[in-house]
Length: 244
Image 1 (cartoon, rainbow, N blue to C red):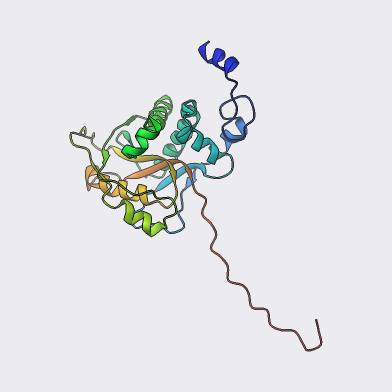
Image 2: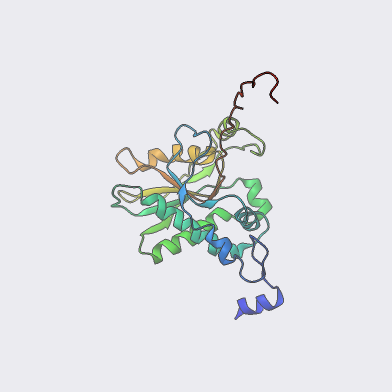
């Protein structure tokens, strides 16, 4: 009833395309139901197997930004469902899975938390856990990572610069809960671009997973589309003299 009253007072519109109605219309939601392997243009060494629910392009981009930067917390439900789909997709690549699934949110920096007033990745992880449990997957969220030091704003940095910028950014949290035997660790985030963040997080989590445990995996709501490599112009031999 409260949701219906809110709709009357503050009519909703799709965060992706602006059409009045649901917070994310069916057409835009369908763009986040296309799980695929994330493929940064230049794979960082150690980049974990990563599945994205959709491409970070078109209406998906403003929808994710509306949730992340503009306070539209109601988008946690559809975006969290998309993240759950990505988690299920990356788990499907395992030959066997005997242990439970543990989603590890990428921690936000202190400045970002102050600016947003919330931890948007944890909100997505909590929603994804609920979706996975409803589907019968023994999943839970566990905070294993924390930020160490400060990383510069990554906007405008190359892939190599992003990796250097994030080196040593994450460490294991003190007093983190012990993991069940055979637990599958899945690093979760909203968007993957160069892969530097997920690579750094997976490297820190690898010792926690143990040498005999499953590999550290990753899942995101959306991945920046891989741009095709520029093709060199083809040489066209000159025609016979006198022929235009």
